[in-house]
Image (cartoon, rainbow, N blue to C red; front, side, top):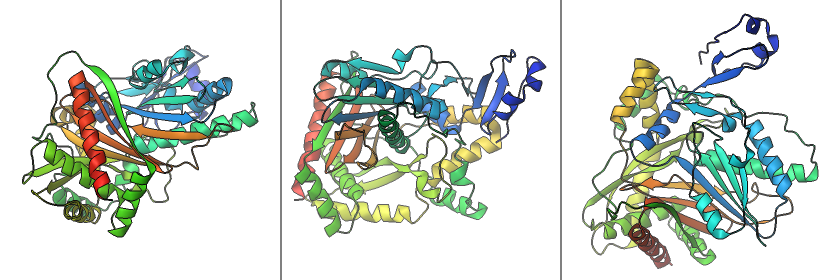
Length: 458
């Protein structure tokens, strides 16, 4: 990545310690005054995409994770862990300066820790926090709330511009590790920072030119499409953000696992099948083609390159399935599985990354951003499977984790998404929306149907 250094005083040229501190992701440096330096860091393509989701009315680009414990956390240790976390992952304390295609991240001081960490004593206040958001222009890009009760809980919100669902899980694992280390040794200080390359080059650079052409030609529609089908929603102007969750009990979750094993399909195939069947009924789409994108974690293409940054590695792929009248679950499952198998054999999810990369390389950052802003389409219906939250990695010393779930951004009407996560022997389905009471009722009905559909396979 090319970087430039701008000087306001010649003293900055002589400041060798500052020069040694410059990283490869540095975009600019200014306001040198002999004492402090304000650093600018180049924004990346998916920073622009996620920020534009607010502009286009798709979602509020936030990630959410809620963790519940069997007893209490040590408050001062939790706060210390969060401070160490932000130092270890510097982008969390930076602010985003939106300058169209030349947007950048900038270092700033975190003078107000209440923006980073707060404590509440009621479920209502905890829920209100969970439905809130970070503000990229003022920071920080992460905030945490501790529900202090007989059994504590944590709500963690991260700006989706900074990372994706896979990165969110990495963050909570890291936070739990820091807490555990600090509880044992309050003087503990991490010996590394996570502040490397945030671009999508790690995914696309290793693909041969002829393969890129093949991917773009074969998967030319595997990106977000606006779509014609809409989930039933009210038109009332008074809306509030809500996150509805449905935790599947152990026997239901185990049933999904066993059903998948019997039919040699993934859990994701089973959930997608239920999703298609429920939406086909609620949208009156039986006998009609229903299509929507699902999220793909592109870390599958990193190989052994590792990941020394918090970034977005998500993409999308479009699935199209027709659920016929009288068709049983297994019949729909085979359609979904066959389509997913075909997608996996043809560079799953790479089309979106290659298109974005090509646009920015050919037209440059500013014009590339303008083209992105004009062409970006928001899927009206989509789904994301954030996957398993690893109980072996999510461990807070002295405070066993009872339950955990994660979900993506809160959508703006008419957009609809279901998020899925698993923890230990349970699965949680989430629907997030800025909506009315009627919208909450419709989404609750949807979750009821999802639970019944998954119950039917047993």
